[in-house]
Structures are given as structure tokens and as C-alpha cells.
Length: 375
Image (cartoon, rainbow, N blue to C red; front, side, top):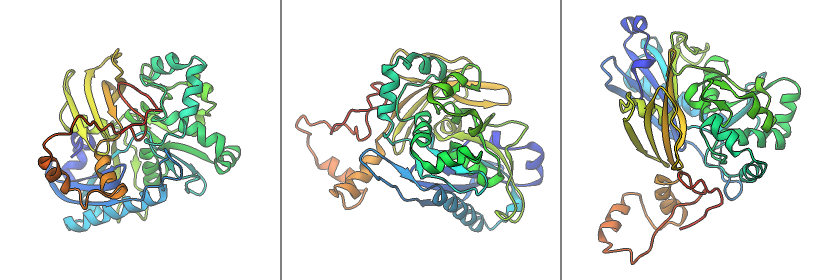
């Protein structure tokens, strides 16, 4: 599935035979095991609960995500009829931008994870635009001021959660995206990779550092953020802690799910492109070793950093596509099951001029309108 080659230590791979891949997504978590030929030999998948406490708000429970990650890893190992001793490394791909805050003493989350789809920080983004910060954020991060990204979610937590505020006061606060939450639970370290950091609205994609200027604008302390590591490097992320597996396994590669898909589709060269159809749609174009600024509403982002080599990409993000099918089935219930949709479409002669715009959580590229709603 995702970029096996960068997850492997050649020395380890001569001794052991398999790679364990974690794909932590918006609706569920998947674990897959591959052999050294890149063939899938086992997998497991389980969904997690979606929370919608207010219109436009979306949350996940971080503890549930971690517990279900452990379940799918165990089930995949059982299906493959191997033990953890046969696994040479773990690779992680994750839903991006979703934010988790936790207590470093207890390891427990301080608030539900604020999901990338959540629009609760729309007013914060609007205020920052009114104060003239749009160009600063875009020129530094390659992104736009939109609730989609992690930075304003972190600010919201610091401003509104008493548990987060107390943890900050006592020096026990850590904040990161889902990859960081998984790495913390696996290794006890607060780390992230370049691809995930580049989606936070806090990372200078030109310097490869957290932007102190942007952190000051949002009043976010640097020390609560994860250390940024290459997506894959000779220095691994760490080893799994005792008690998770029968033996310790190195975590050797991490990437945001869309960048991982770009790599997985072998888009290694500038000009190569992929489009992923899932909860949303995400088009990424590899632009090579230099960031390219779009004049058409696309995002400039980091694809990955392998060793010392940074690759950049242009991205077009459509927030809601596949999620519409779930809404048709579970929300307004006009489908008995998802498979009915194709039959209904084939039976429909025309739409009589009716268009459906799935702006459930605003519009992404190229409009970037957080207030848009339409059907």
C-alpha cells in the first residue's frame, strides 16, 4: 500500500520478512502486512465513532483511535500467522490536520480530537484575515487561512479548554496531529514528520522549521509541539514500548495519508500526479525540490523528506466527496445501502438541470470559502 521502500532498513530486512503498515483514516483504522516483495499477506480494518457536538463541528476520541489501532495490528498479525518478531518495521500514514492534545504525565487526551473537517475556528480565521495576516501565513506555509488546518484548532484548544490550559500551566501539555498521537503511544516520544508538519499552518516550508512568527501570532508555545523528523531517515522514530507487542519494533516511516498516496502511486518525479477518492478528494502534483506557488487556489505543501531530500507538491483539496454516500445512507436515508447508488444513477435519464454541491463544511480548493453551504 504505502511507500514500503522508505520504511525498510536493509539490514533489518535481511533478517526479517514483513512490514506492518498503519493507515489511520477519518472513518477508521487499517493495518496491513506486506512481505519483502510488496505483496499484502494480511489486513484488518475497523471504524471509529464520529462525534458532531454542534453544526459544523467534528470530533474523534483519541483513546478509541489508539485502542482500535492496537486491535487491527493484532488481528493482522493473527491473520498472517506471524509474531511481532517477524516484523522489521512499522510505517504510519494518517488523516492529516486533525489535532490531539494530551497530558505527557498521564498519556491521556485532554479533549476529543478536533478533526480536519471541523469548522469551529472559522471566526478565528476570519479575524486573522481582517487583521491582514493572510499573506504572511500563505507565504510562510504555502497554505491559506482556513479552519481545515491545525494551527487555529490548537489556538482554539488553548483558549477554550480548561484541561489544556492547566496542562500548559504545569508543563504537561503536548499537542500534535494523529501521527504524533500514534507515535507517542508507540514510543513515548512527541514526534511528527515534514509532510504532517506542513499541514499545520505553523511550519515554514522554506526553512523546514516551526515558524516562531506564526506561533506568536496565534499565541502557541513552541515547546508543546512535536519535534519534526524526515518522513524516512537512518534515524528511526523509535521502538515500540514494552507490552504492545511480544518484541520491540522500530517505527521507520511516517507520512500524511495524501502524501503517502503520492509516493505509493510512484509519483517520484516532478510533474507526476495522483488523485485520491475517499472521504474527500485530494489531487497532488509532485513539483520537485522547489516549492511552486499556485495562482489558481491550490496549496503548496511538502510531499515528503527522505534523508536530506525535500520534495514539494501542489494540492487541490475537496473536503466532501465519498462522505456524501455515507450521508445519503445514514443521514437522509434515501439509500438502503451504498451499492444502490450506481443502480439509481443508471436508471436516471437526466438531472433536469439540478446540481449537487457538497459544501457540508465549506468549500476547499480553489474557492476556500469556509462559510459556503449548498446542495
